[in-house]
Image 1 (cartoon, rainbow, N blue to C red):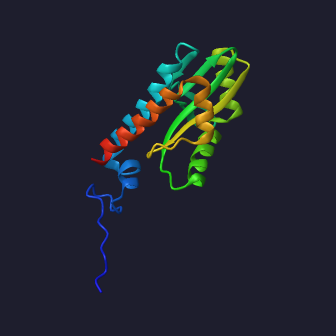
Image 2: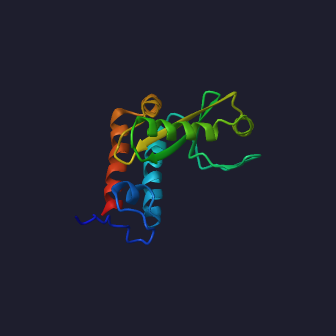
Image 3: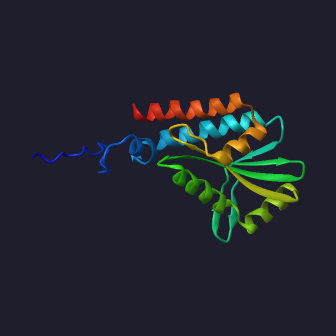
Length: 170
Protein backbone atom coordinates (compact mmCIF):
# COMPACT_ATOMS: atom_id res chain seq x y z
CA UNK A 1 0.00 0.00 0.00
CA UNK A 2 1.11 3.49 -0.75
CA UNK A 3 1.48 5.89 2.13
CA UNK A 4 -0.54 9.05 1.60
CA UNK A 5 1.59 12.17 1.55
CA UNK A 6 -0.09 15.20 3.03
CA UNK A 7 0.57 18.38 1.08
CA UNK A 8 2.55 21.05 2.87
CA UNK A 9 1.98 24.77 2.67
CA UNK A 10 3.59 26.40 -0.36
CA UNK A 11 4.56 29.43 1.73
CA UNK A 12 7.56 27.46 2.98
CA UNK A 13 6.31 27.06 6.54
CA UNK A 14 6.26 23.25 6.28
CA UNK A 15 2.83 22.99 7.87
CA UNK A 16 0.23 20.64 6.48
CA UNK A 17 -2.18 22.61 4.30
CA UNK A 18 -5.57 23.10 5.93
CA UNK A 19 -8.16 25.81 6.26
CA UNK A 20 -7.10 26.26 9.88
CA UNK A 21 -3.46 26.79 8.94
CA UNK A 22 -4.15 29.18 6.07
CA UNK A 23 -6.86 31.15 7.92
CA UNK A 24 -5.14 31.32 11.31
CA UNK A 25 -1.39 30.69 11.24
CA UNK A 26 0.38 30.91 7.89
CA UNK A 27 2.89 33.79 7.74
CA UNK A 28 1.77 34.51 4.17
CA UNK A 29 -1.74 35.44 5.35
CA UNK A 30 -0.66 37.54 8.35
CA UNK A 31 -1.71 40.91 6.87
CA UNK A 32 -5.06 39.54 5.75
CA UNK A 33 -5.71 38.16 9.25
CA UNK A 34 -4.89 41.55 10.78
CA UNK A 35 -7.27 43.18 8.30
CA UNK A 36 -10.01 40.68 9.23
CA UNK A 37 -9.52 41.42 12.93
CA UNK A 38 -9.51 45.19 12.40
CA UNK A 39 -12.60 45.02 10.20
CA UNK A 40 -14.61 43.28 12.93
CA UNK A 41 -13.22 45.57 15.60
CA UNK A 42 -14.01 48.73 13.61
CA UNK A 43 -17.56 47.59 12.86
CA UNK A 44 -18.24 47.17 16.58
CA UNK A 45 -16.54 50.48 17.42
CA UNK A 46 -18.52 52.43 14.84
CA UNK A 47 -21.78 50.91 16.09
CA UNK A 48 -21.24 52.02 19.69
CA UNK A 49 -19.62 55.44 19.23
CA UNK A 50 -22.97 57.20 19.66
CA UNK A 51 -23.53 55.45 23.01
CA UNK A 52 -20.14 55.91 24.68
CA UNK A 53 -16.66 57.33 24.29
CA UNK A 54 -14.55 54.72 22.53
CA UNK A 55 -10.74 54.72 22.45
CA UNK A 56 -8.92 52.43 20.07
CA UNK A 57 -5.51 50.81 20.63
CA UNK A 58 -4.35 53.05 23.46
CA UNK A 59 -1.00 51.78 24.75
CA UNK A 60 -0.32 51.39 28.47
CA UNK A 61 3.04 50.48 29.99
CA UNK A 62 2.74 48.08 32.92
CA UNK A 63 5.32 46.13 34.88
CA UNK A 64 4.29 43.09 32.79
CA UNK A 65 4.95 44.96 29.54
CA UNK A 66 2.96 47.03 27.09
CA UNK A 67 -0.77 46.52 26.90
CA UNK A 68 -2.78 47.79 23.93
CA UNK A 69 -6.44 46.82 24.20
CA UNK A 70 -8.37 47.04 20.97
CA UNK A 71 -11.04 49.21 22.55
CA UNK A 72 -11.66 51.00 25.82
CA UNK A 73 -15.30 51.97 26.15
CA UNK A 74 -15.97 54.76 28.66
CA UNK A 75 -19.54 55.30 29.80
CA UNK A 76 -21.20 56.46 33.04
CA UNK A 77 -18.03 56.42 35.14
CA UNK A 78 -17.05 52.94 34.00
CA UNK A 79 -14.54 51.63 31.48
CA UNK A 80 -14.78 48.38 29.58
CA UNK A 81 -11.70 46.91 27.97
CA UNK A 82 -12.97 45.09 24.87
CA UNK A 83 -10.45 43.05 22.95
CA UNK A 84 -11.21 41.24 19.72
CA UNK A 85 -9.81 37.86 18.78
CA UNK A 86 -10.55 35.67 15.78
CA UNK A 87 -9.74 32.10 16.76
CA UNK A 88 -9.70 28.53 15.48
CA UNK A 89 -12.76 26.71 16.75
CA UNK A 90 -11.64 23.19 17.34
CA UNK A 91 -14.34 22.85 20.01
CA UNK A 92 -16.05 24.84 22.78
CA UNK A 93 -13.09 24.20 25.10
CA UNK A 94 -10.80 25.83 22.54
CA UNK A 95 -13.06 28.86 22.27
CA UNK A 96 -13.20 29.06 26.08
CA UNK A 97 -9.40 28.93 26.26
CA UNK A 98 -8.92 31.92 23.96
CA UNK A 99 -11.70 33.88 25.64
CA UNK A 100 -10.12 33.24 29.04
CA UNK A 101 -6.60 34.11 27.83
CA UNK A 102 -7.77 37.50 26.55
CA UNK A 103 -9.59 38.25 29.80
CA UNK A 104 -6.54 37.26 31.85
CA UNK A 105 -4.23 39.42 29.73
CA UNK A 106 -6.19 42.57 30.46
CA UNK A 107 -7.50 41.77 33.93
CA UNK A 108 -4.47 43.30 35.67
CA UNK A 109 -4.98 45.65 38.63
CA UNK A 110 -2.09 47.84 37.47
CA UNK A 111 -3.64 48.30 34.02
CA UNK A 112 -7.03 49.01 35.57
CA UNK A 113 -5.52 51.75 37.74
CA UNK A 114 -3.89 53.35 34.69
CA UNK A 115 -7.25 53.35 32.90
CA UNK A 116 -9.04 54.77 35.95
CA UNK A 117 -6.50 57.60 36.13
CA UNK A 118 -6.56 58.34 32.40
CA UNK A 119 -10.33 58.51 31.97
CA UNK A 120 -11.41 59.32 35.55
CA UNK A 121 -13.59 56.26 35.94
CA UNK A 122 -14.40 54.25 39.08
CA UNK A 123 -14.61 50.78 37.62
CA UNK A 124 -12.86 48.78 34.88
CA UNK A 125 -14.09 45.48 33.48
CA UNK A 126 -12.78 43.23 30.72
CA UNK A 127 -14.78 41.72 27.88
CA UNK A 128 -13.78 39.90 24.73
CA UNK A 129 -15.14 39.76 21.23
CA UNK A 130 -14.18 36.17 20.52
CA UNK A 131 -15.33 34.83 17.15
CA UNK A 132 -14.04 31.76 15.35
CA UNK A 133 -12.84 31.99 11.78
CA UNK A 134 -15.95 29.96 10.92
CA UNK A 135 -18.24 32.60 12.43
CA UNK A 136 -19.04 31.05 15.80
CA UNK A 137 -19.31 33.62 18.61
CA UNK A 138 -18.28 32.73 22.15
CA UNK A 139 -21.43 32.88 24.34
CA UNK A 140 -19.94 35.46 26.74
CA UNK A 141 -18.92 37.63 23.79
CA UNK A 142 -22.40 37.44 22.34
CA UNK A 143 -23.92 38.52 25.66
CA UNK A 144 -21.52 41.46 25.86
CA UNK A 145 -22.03 42.57 22.25
CA UNK A 146 -25.83 42.28 22.48
CA UNK A 147 -25.82 44.87 25.29
CA UNK A 148 -24.25 47.40 22.93
CA UNK A 149 -25.25 46.62 19.35
CA UNK A 150 -28.18 45.17 17.42
CA UNK A 151 -28.45 41.56 16.30
CA UNK A 152 -28.06 42.88 12.78
CA UNK A 153 -24.68 44.42 13.64
CA UNK A 154 -23.59 41.17 15.27
CA UNK A 155 -24.62 39.35 12.08
CA UNK A 156 -22.56 41.81 10.02
CA UNK A 157 -19.57 41.15 12.26
CA UNK A 158 -19.92 37.42 11.66
CA UNK A 159 -20.35 38.00 7.94
CA UNK A 160 -17.19 40.13 7.92
CA UNK A 161 -15.26 37.27 9.55
CA UNK A 162 -16.61 34.74 7.07
CA UNK A 163 -15.98 36.88 4.00
CA UNK A 164 -12.47 37.75 5.16
CA UNK A 165 -11.69 34.11 5.95
CA UNK A 166 -12.93 33.14 2.49
CA UNK A 167 -10.69 35.83 0.99
CA UNK A 168 -7.71 34.50 2.95
CA UNK A 169 -8.38 30.95 1.74
CA UNK A 170 -8.59 31.96 -1.92
